Image 1: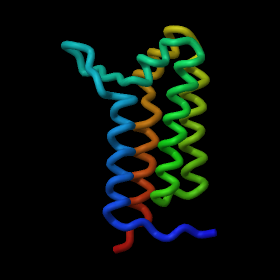
Image 2: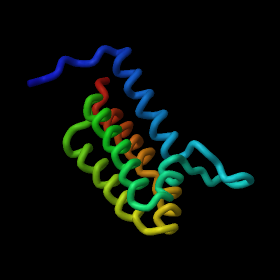
Image 3: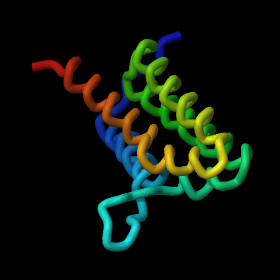
Image 4: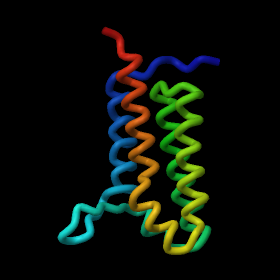
Length: 123
């Protein structure tokens, strides 16, 4: 069953939520006197296993939102792969948290989605 197309206001509201959540998870805070940014993904990821699984669940919800906004299956697969890499390496104590700070799976996925929109935009 095909879902009816989103109204422009619904689309913008959902995209804004996607953008804010990605920033909150990956770059909300800054290490003082540096350009290094991190978010709740790295902080919650300090909790062994449970933290990484919790942030993976939020990240997967963002993929679902992107799919609602028009991401195709191939793009969703790439986004899920980024989440799997982030989650798997996040299981490694300390090194996984450092990886979270620099990999930023959610912002990476948001950029993939924006690139997808740009490629498929009508003239």
